[in-house]
Amino acid sequence: MKFLKFLMTLCLGIGSAAANDGKVRSIDIYVTPYYSANAGKAEYVKVYDKIDNLLLSGKVEDFKKAEKIVEDAPQMVSPITLFVLSARAYDLGLRDEAVFWFYNAKNRAILLRGVINLDDDRFFEVKSAIGAFIKLVGDVVNPYAFCDIKKQQDIVAKSLEWSKANVYEAMFLPEFPSLHEDRKVALAKGIEALEARNKKEKEHFEDETNLETFKALRKANNIDEKFCF
Image (tube, rainbow, N blue to C red; front, side, top):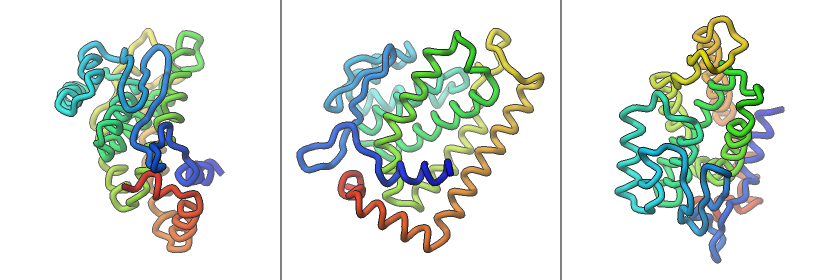
């Protein structure tokens, strides 16, 4: 049931900023106290002091610098920062990069949730923000990602490898509460679950009937016209 609901969001997602021609070219959202963007321009970025100003500038070359900083040392970069990287990439026309960073962010958030007790009151703001970013950024990035299912599956695989190779080390900090005696075992189980989810999605689209139904639903809701350009 959850998987079917996920597929529906890929067909019914509504962009946050559709232009006069109906095409969704930017992700205009506000998630306090981390990020605000309007008409494709960042108004406020406060996620990681080393890259905040670079992401705020609106220049591709500055985004690439920020991206490299994260790529060079991703171990303590929060999922929220990765979601903002995704949003900025989309606004700058780097939409495949937006998909990659969105999947990285979502994977990191899922794995974190599986190890750390985010229901602890101290994480209320972070948990709420992660949920908001998954919904708001995903409403734009997901419909675009499935314009080309083969490419989407390639990015899924690449993101999973990135997530496995670049574990979020904050989940092992003793000051962050966990319900698990062995956090590494919990992480391994989380990775197995991601692998199973990705396998299920791939198999779903390998079925021609499922694929044609999916394409028809996107067409009926003008998703390709909005996102595939």
